[in-house]
Amino acid sequence: MLIGEYTNTLDAKGRVIIPAAFRYDLGDRFVLAKGIEKCLNIYPENEWIAFVQKLQEAMPSSVKENRKAIRFFSANATVCELDKQGRILIPSKLREYASLDKELLFVGGFHKVEIWNPDFYEDSEAEEIGSILEEKNIKY
Amino acid sequence: MLIGEYTNTLDAKGRVIIPAAFRYDLGDRFVLAKGIEKCLNIYPENEWIAFVQKLQEAMPSSVKENRKAIRFFSANATVCELDKQGRILIPSKLREYASLDKELLFVGGFHKVEIWNPDFYEDSEAEEIGSILEEKNIKY
DNA sequence: ATTCGTATATTCACCGATCAGCACCGTTTT
DNA sequence: AAAACGGTGCTGATCGGTGAATATACGAAT
Image 1 (spheres, rainbow over the protein chains, first blue to last red):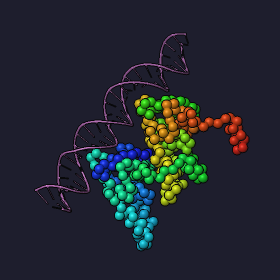
Image 2: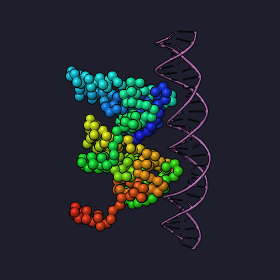
Image 3: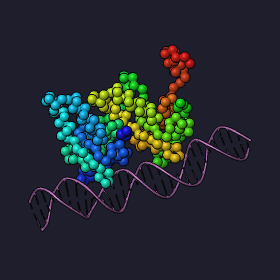
Image 4: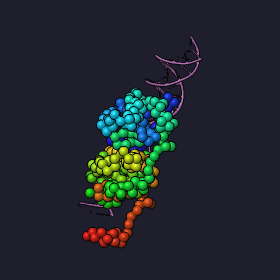
C-alpha cells in the first residue's frame, strides 16, 4: 500500500530518486501521468491498465467530450523505468505541468503516488477532515 | 483489547518503545497515522485496512473534496514494524504534527492506540462523562 | 529487604538512502 | 570538427535509520 510523504530533489538533468519506501509497490516499471490537480501521478502498471479500462468503459469515444478526456490521459502519460540508481527521468512537459522545480514532494495515495511541488501542495487541516468524517459517520 | 495509559520516551533518533502491554494486540506490523486531534494513532493492520476500505467506499475519488480527504489519510500514515527491541521509528513529520518531544503518552483506545505529548493530552473529568452517559442513557 | 526477571533507557557503531558533482556517450547544431 | 544538448552512469560525502550491547528502573516473588 502506497502511503506516506517523502521529499527528494531533481538533479540538473531532471531526474529524481523514487523514495525507497515506494519501490516495492511500484515495481521497476510504471506509468507517469498528469494529475487532475497541479501534480503528476505514478501508477503501478496493473493499476494503470485497470484505470484505462474503466475510463474506456465509462466514456465511449463516440462522444467528443469523452475523446478530449481520454486524450488528456493518453497523450500525457509515459512509461518509466527505474535506472540502476533507483531514479526516473521526468519529461520536461510533465515537469512544466506540475511546476516542478528542485524539491519534489512524493505523496502516497494508496494505489498510486502523487508528485507535487511542495509550494502548490493541496493538503487539508485535520479539523476540516474531522467534520467530513462526522458528517459521513465514518469511524476513525 | 487496547486499554490503559503508559509513558515512554523518544530516543535521539526518534524511536520509542511500544508499551509491552500493547504488543500482543498490535502485532509486530501496524500503521501509524495522524489523529484528528493533536495526536497520532496506531492501528493494527486489519483495523487500518478495514478503515481504508470504508473510506474509499464512502468517498469516491471523482470528487475533489474527497480526494483531499483521502490524501489526508494516505499521505500521513506509515507502516511500522517493531525492531528486535520492541521499538518503532516515528517519522519526523508525524513527530512535529503531534508536537512530540521526549515523553510520549500512549493511550489505549479499545481497537487502536493514541500517542500524545502529555502536555497536550485532552482528558476529561468523570463528572462531565457522567452527564454524557445520562443524556444517552448508557448503563454503567 | 533482597533477589530475580522483565521492561525501559541510553549509547555507539554500522549500513543504506540520498545528494551533488562530474565523466561519458550519441545526436544535433554551428 | 567542435560545440551544445539531452540522456545515462558512476563516485564519494553526508545524513538519517537500524542493530547491538549495555545500563538502569521497576515490580514480583521469596
